[in-house]
Amino acid sequence: MSYQVDEKGYYGRFGGAYIPEILHKCVEDLQKSYLTILESKSFGTEYRDLLRDYAGRPSPLYFAKRLSEKYGCRIYLKREDLNHTGAHKINNTIGQILVAQRMGKTRIIAETGAGQHGVATATVCALMNMPCVVYMGKTDIERQQPNVKKMQMLGAAVVPVLSGNMTLKDATNEAIRDWCCHPSDTFYIIGSTVGPHPYPDMVARLQSVISEEIKQQLTEKEGRDYPDYLMACVGGGSNAAGTIYHYLDDERTKIILAEAGGEGILSGKSAATIQLGKEGIIHGARTLVMQNEDGQIEEPYSISAGLDYPGIGPIHANIAEKKRAEVIAINDDEAIAAVFELTRLEGIIPALESAHILGALPKFGFKRDDVVVLTVSGRGDKDMDTYLKFMNQ
Ligand SMILES: *Cc1c(COP(=O)(O)O)cnc(C)c1O
Image (tube, rainbow, N blue to C red; front, top):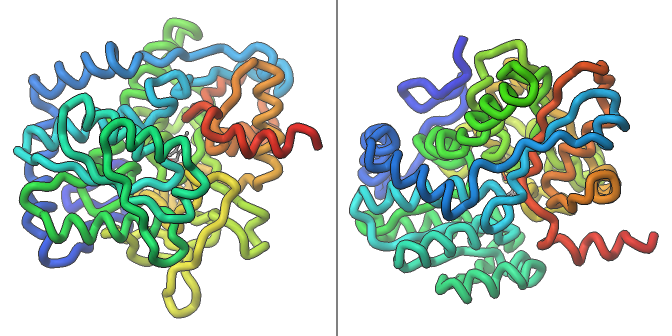
């Protein structure tokens, strides 16, 4: 059994491309050309060089000694927090802008929630001298000011979105609307393993450098190329997809994913899509969606603006359903506790999103010689305001 995408763009019953007629041609063009481009020599060389010299890869695989002692196993942290722009997002935006150039596109659009994907996109647009428009909900613009300023400084136009909750889902709707108006010259750089086929597969491939490096680094450190556990947080699922990509069909490795429980999955304030979602279509893909009885999308909630998405990448909906991955919801308070624990045990201040998978560590009884690789998807600089509120409690 393979957990990778099939020829039609599906992972089991999830995925596909459910798009308005006006986008058919440009999505079809991308479906037909993305693999040829990603596998071409010119793309490979330019992508690798930029990942190394611009983004700072390979990211270290760090043996976390004190964290390991605490949880009674061997924990390695995959340090995506050390990449340029502070998270794994840059792996994807570098790749997609190179694809856009090879398809002759001259204008870039993107959606953003917390602003991390917006900054990573604005960064590569500055690098490649391409005009960039980023759609961002007004609520997020207000709570993520430093990232808004960074995007503007990088030369991007940040367009406030006033519909719905004025957060990530609404920004994505607006980006798709823009794309429908400019399908011939515009490339939409999607920030996670979501959207119509081929985006989930393209983003997973671009992030798969994470597991490619883990294989090599683990061989050097442990003498074998697979861990007993792989752990990552999921918003839309891109850092998780990159972390597990080369291990999906290797059942020796257990996969643990953490989604945002918010104030608890039964509290009505949650973003735990895999636990709470039902099959539906969102932003061009069939997947699990948080929705009410009438099929209206329910507004997700998480303390972390990078995880409050009401859908989930189809790759993860499938591996959760087939029980290839164990998915647990980690609540706000558990994530916050994990932030302070990693900070004091290892001197690493993680992003709030990454803290959700750190918060899963106490929930498993590991054995002494279990090798655990946990991806720290980003750094905590952008979350300092939130952390300071909890510091004196
Ligand atoms: C955006 C983001 C996430 C969530 O996105 P995925 O596509 O699920 O990886 C997680 N961590 C950080 C640091 C982020 O910036």
